[in-house]
Amino acid sequence: MDAFLLQLAAGVATGGIYASVALAIVMIYRATHHVNFAQGEMATLSTFVALTLIQAGLPYWVAFAATLAVSFVMGTLVERLIMRPVQHAPVLTQVGVYIGMLLIIGNLTGWVFGYTTKVFPSPFEGHGPALGGLISAHQLGSVGVTLAVLLLVYLFFTQTSLGLAMRGAAYNPASAKMVGIRVGRMLALGWGLAAMIGAVAGMMVAPIVFLDPNMMLGVLLYAFAGALLGGIDNPAGAVAGGFLVGVLENLAGPYLVGTELKLTVALAIIIGVLVLRPSGLFGRIVHARV
Amino acid sequence: MLLEVKGLKAGYGTAAVLHGLDFEVGEGDVATLLGANGAGKTTTLRAICGMVRAEGEIVFGGERVSKEATESIARRGVAHVPEGRGTFMELTVEENLRLGAHTRRDPKVRQDFERMCGWFPLLKERWRQQAGTLSGGEQQMLAIARALMMRPRLLLLDEPSFGLAPLIVRDIFGILRRVREESGVGILLVEQNATLALDLAERAYLLETGRIVLAGPAVEIRQDEAIRRSYLGY
View 1 (spheres, each protein chain N blue to C red):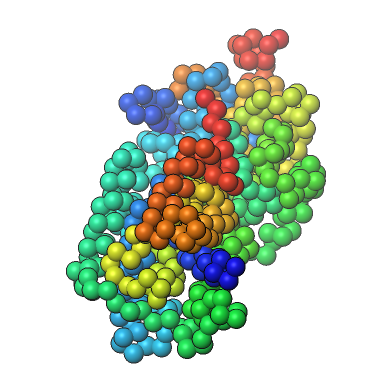
View 2 (cartoon, rainbow over the protein chains, first blue to last red; view 1 turned 30 degrees about the vertical axis):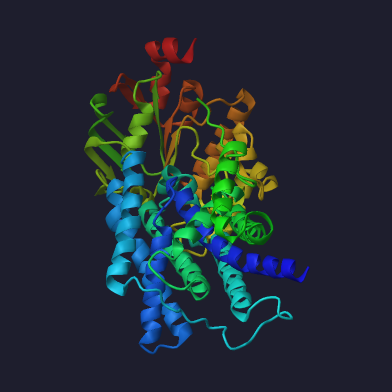
């Protein structure tokens, strides 16, 4: 029973990471109807930036905030310089650009920061295990940070006029322009926010899986499974899906398939959802009139 | 003049739709564009808003706005209620109206919510409801209210009667009459229902295959033999 609870708690902790990345994926998806395959690579790059700042002697939370700012700028630049020129191009062109970014950003990270695996500090270390040894201090802290990020994102989109304008621009770009919303700027802003959310996920997962240029590859796969499971056009669903996948993964490891085959759980979820319920658990089925 | 259009040409790809239109809308006036399906009425509105490639001169409030982006033209005070209404279906009635006021920073926005509820009492009952669940007539009212939340100087209306029951259409035109009296907004109205449009408008233009074939005060156009026979049906 203890082992079960342990796995459950660990699942919630990693699930929070998947939920964040899933949310970043869904935000881009809702605005562009494409999945940004480079979301994980962008997060890894952000995490390396954070490590560099920490090693330069900045306190953790200062480096954290600076990394968010850098990530935001990186996200908006990717939209302005790389995605905007191809925004009216056919789907395959765009997918090609996403995969190109995945490779280029990943290798750029390795080229600049090296391929050796690095230890990434946790701001919650030194507090010892929490909740009666059920969960490490870092896991508890990262769940807290993740939930805080999700809450902030939720409040931003529902309570601010800028968030409302971004939703309007994503749902109906033509009408958004007619009420004077600068749709292009909203898109760049969305990319910036998604990159920030990804950066938080990267910094929270790095102390667990260690930092190397391919760190997010597995995470992205689980996050993608989570986003699909919750419904790729539903932010709240993606978050729930992310947590669910985290728990499923951690329980399937010891009880079902063994640790080596854990990644297949994500793949099975992706294929299962696409075959049985393409709109996801909470997704909306879009009926198009012809 | 609020809006002056000279030699407007527009089209889609290689297909030309408008072959040089001249028309104008006075400050606080209602002008109507009449014509059969495919005459180019919707394209004219889209050209004014910078939504289709267009040539010619469009002067709004004394400034040339041709070739400007849709967002910029909207920010100058042109509100467009497009064909199909352009409602944000996933958002609530309130959020749709808030988006209408997106560009405004003045303190009168709150007051304007009340104003819309006065003009469109039905919307008040549906305040927190998703716009996609509204009936056609309610959605048309919401679209007009959303446009008015911009406090525009010019309102472009694309067939507000489209697909609605006659009683609802009468309601909407009644509201439009009240809106123009109380707000002084200029209106460019595209309409299939010529009787209603000519009742509301000061000036009318008849469009046939991308050309204006008749222009003049609405009262005179009403008396025109050809118009009566082909558009008014008596």
